Length: 230
Image (cartoon, rainbow, N blue to C red; front, side):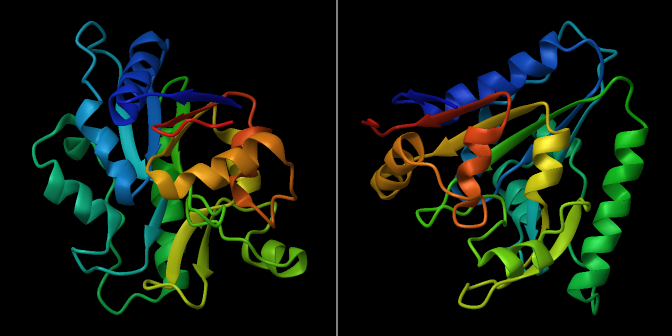
């Protein structure tokens, strides 16, 4: 894991995504993060010298709600209407009366179908980092419970965590990310992220204790932050 401290983290993440798209000999699937990490979307540029390249975007985790103010993909469309990313975004909005299990199953099937259409696909994922060490809808839990929620052999799973404002998510499992994602770009901004980044850099924990360990375990991960990490 490499940490980059900069005054313009959103710009650099967006440029890193753009560079990966432009340089890859094939199509790209880019998994995005919600919340503050939606700031990077503005800086993802459409490739101009690779018209044959197909790039598809989807949220790497989604909240189990169709409310515009809480659903990540609807927030992206609201904040960046008409953007290149918005025009190539797989919708992850629950259908009316669709329970969390059906929602997770449907978007999992949709993702697999769309990925199968791509030629020589590269998968990029933007990961936010929570101050408690969670990332991409993957939350700290006791080990036995963690692997019941996030089975090692599955991709997108339904997630329910008590105490959250929106306590239901559909998320990729950490094992799927480590096996299948080619490049991870972390985005952690604000003073509240300083302690977790320093802990990540200097201490190792089990992934169920701190899911953001994905950033250390992944073969190609760079974290962009506006905090100086000792």
